[in-house]
Length: 488
View 1: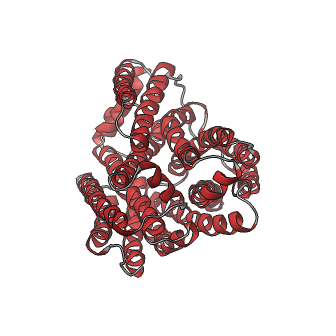
View 2: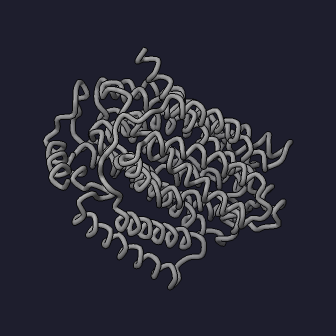
C-alpha cells in the first residue's frame, strides 16, 4: 500500500535524523576522555565539533542541488554509507588531528543526508500531510539528543569514548539496507552542475565561518578580518555567477515566494538566537555550578522530552492551519524562555529554574521546527526541492555557527578564552567573583540572543498565509517555473 511505502520512507529518514542527532550530543560528553586519551588540548579537540559544523554548512546547498540532478535517494543513501564508514574511522583514529579529519568526512555524509532528506519527504508526502512528517523528524532529533546524552555518559564512563563513534556503525548498516531498498527517486532534473558557482559558494561559507569561529577562539586579528573580507568577496562572486548561468546552484527566483523566503530567514535567526542559549546553559551548569558533563546534560533533558513528544502533533496542526501562527507562537515561547533565564538565573539560583526554562523553550521548539521546515518545502516544486532543502540546511547551519560565536564571545568577556573552552568541555569551572562576572556576561548574551529570536518571530509572522489543501499555485512559484524553464 502507498501509505505503508510512505511510512517506510519516513522511517528511513527518521533513522538518518536519529544518527545525526545522537552524534550531536554524544560528542559533548566525551571531550575530557578524548583530550586525555589522545594527549591533546581542549583548544584542539573542540574542533571535533567545529569542523562538523563548518563542513555541513559549506556543502549543504551543493549536495541538495546534486540530489536534484542525479537523484536524491542516491545522494541520501551515499550519505549513509559515508557517515557510517567515517564513524568507524573516527572510532579508530590514533591522533587528535586524524580524528578531526575523519569528523570532516563524517560531516560530508551528514550533509548528504540532511540536504536531501527534507526534499525526499516533500516528494513523498502530499502538501496537506507534510507538516506531520516533519514533526516525526523533529521527534527523532530530540529522541536522538536524549539517547546521545544517556549513551554518551554511559559509554564514555564504562566502555571508552571510541564507542560513541562505533555505535553509529550498526545503525548505519541498517539504514543503508533500508534506504537502498525503499528510498527511490521520483524526480530528477536534466540540469548540469554549476561547478563555478558551487566552488565560489563553498569558499565563501568556509572563509566566513572559519573567520567567525576563529574570532570566538582568539579574538580580533588581521587574519580573521582578511578571511572575512575574502569570504564576502567570494559570496559576491557566487551571486554574480548564479545570476548569469543557465542552471544555478541556488535558483534565486525561489526567493520570490514570500513564504519560502521569510521561512528561511526565520530559520536563520531562530538558529542564531536559540542554540547560543543551549551553549551558555551548558557552560553555566558546568563552569558556575560545577556539574559534570553528564549531569549538566540531564538538567536539559526535560526540554528534549517535551519537544520530542509534541513535535508530531504540532506538525499536524501546521498542516491544518499553516505555519505562520504555530511557528510564531513557538518563537514567542522561546523568547519567553530566554527572558525567564535573564530574569532569574544567577550564581546560586535553584537548578529547577533551569529545568522550567528548558520546558518553555522545548515547547516552543516543538511548535517552530516542523511547521517552519514544512513551510519551506511545501512552497517549492520537485525540480527545486533538493536545492531548497540544502538551502534550508545552510541557513540553519549558519545560525548554529553564529550562535556559537555569540555564546563564546560573551563567555570570553568574563573569563579567558582558553578557560571558556575548558568550561564548555567540562574540564574547568569558575569560582567567586569570576563566576559572577561570567553570569553577567551570560545575561548580556541572553539579550542579544533574545533579539535574534524576536527578529525570527517577525519573519515568521510576515511570511504570509498558507494553503496546503492542494498543489502549489503561488504567483511567485509560477514566475520561478517560467524562469527555470526559459533558462533551459
